Image (cartoon, rainbow, N blue to C red; front, top):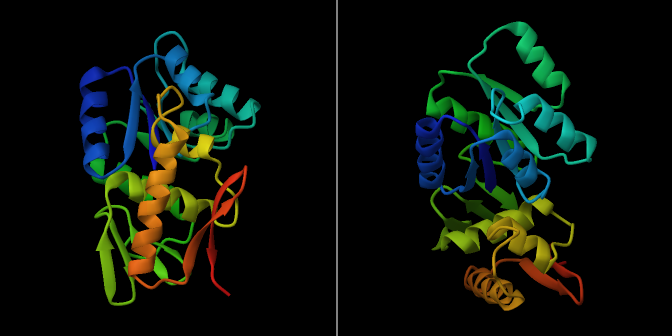
Length: 225
């Protein structure tokens, strides 16, 4: 999962970034509203953690702008304010969740897991299921029944993306944006390499799940009939 963190308190932003990376999330951090909006409009993120009180442009304005552009990325608002009216404004502007400072990092991680459950079928131990396989992104493990295999981080992120998209095709451009960032200098053959790695690990598990290539379009997960 790729997360955009927009927070102007540098110490808090750095601490949250390290915690999220430790939990195997990919994180881009920016520290003012204009940079936050610019990054959010790229539409490459699975989740945006957005402070309300920001220099240059406030979080509510960012939220309204991205919703106006049709970007449905999940948003968790952060603010020092705890009044009901602020929560209502945030939620009415298109936020998916709301967290008042100070908060425990465990609660933030729980909110992230809750939002991820809305996107795909997530089991109680936070694994993602598709066909006969289960992916646990937190420990980079892919399983089928009693067998399992370790993944590297990019393999896990790629498989998570394909699972969450379910029957939708993921283009190479989308995969590069989600896994490396929209300004990364990554070639299409990087995606092909990781697709090949995943196919070998699915074969090792003797899974019924396949990664099919849609020529000229991208890749899609399917279950052998």
